[in-house]
Image (cartoon, rainbow, N blue to C red; front, side):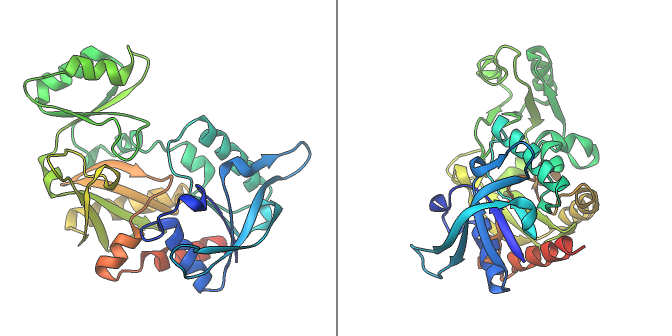
Length: 315
C-alpha cells in the first residue's frame, strides 16, 4: 500500500516514543511505501481534487537522520491507498477546516483514518457524556453558579477546558474552595467558554490509564500515567510516569463496550482514558502510547494497528 501520513513536522518527532513513527516503521517493514505532509500542505483548487505537497520517504534505521526523502511533489489524496490523519491537537479552526478538505478527498475516493467526520463530530472530552454508565459525576457548563453548586455537592473537583491537551489548564479545587472563583473566571472567560467539571477521583494516584482500542478491539495492555511530585495530572506531557499494565476487568468491559461503537463511526484507533473505574476522555485525534506499551510488555501495538489498517483499507 501507499500510505500518506498527515502529521506534525517530522523534524519535531521524538522517535524513541512517537506513535506515528512506530506506525511508519511497521508499515515499511511490511513493504508499504510512506509519504508525509503537514495539514498546511493540503490544498483544494476549483475543479480539481484535494491534493498535498508530499514527501516520499524511507526510514533509515538511524537515531538522528531517521528518514530520507526519496522524492517530493504534489499528489492527490485519492491516489493513496490510505491516508492517516495524525496531527496532534489542539483541535482549532485550522484542524476543523482540514477535516472538511479530507472529507472532500473521501468523496473523491480517498480512504482516510480516522474518518474526518468522526474526528469533527467527536470532541474528545465532551464525547464521554454519551456514556454515563462509564463516567463519574460530570458537568459541562459556562455558568459559574452551576460550577459552584457542583463543588458544594462533591467538595473535591477537577475543572478543565474542553479544548485542552496534555494536561493543560487542569485545576483541582478541594473542600475549602480556595481560588474557585478565580479558576472559573480563568477557564470560562466570563461565560464565553464551556468548562468540564468532574468529581475528583482519588484513584488518579494509581494512574490515568490509556486504554487503546484498535479496529474496535481492546489492546490487552494499557499505559497507566502516574502523577509525580505532588501533581494531580498524570499526563506524560505534564511529567507523569508511564507504567504498562494488563487491562483490568473494568477496563476490558469499557473497551469492549465502546470499541464496536467507535469503529462503526469510523474511528479505527481510539485512546480511552480511565481513572479507577471511570472514563475521563476518549481520544481520537492522535492517540499515543504504542512504544511505551511495547517497550515494557512486548505487545506490538503498531503491528495490531497496521493489521487493522490493511483490513480497513482493503474492505
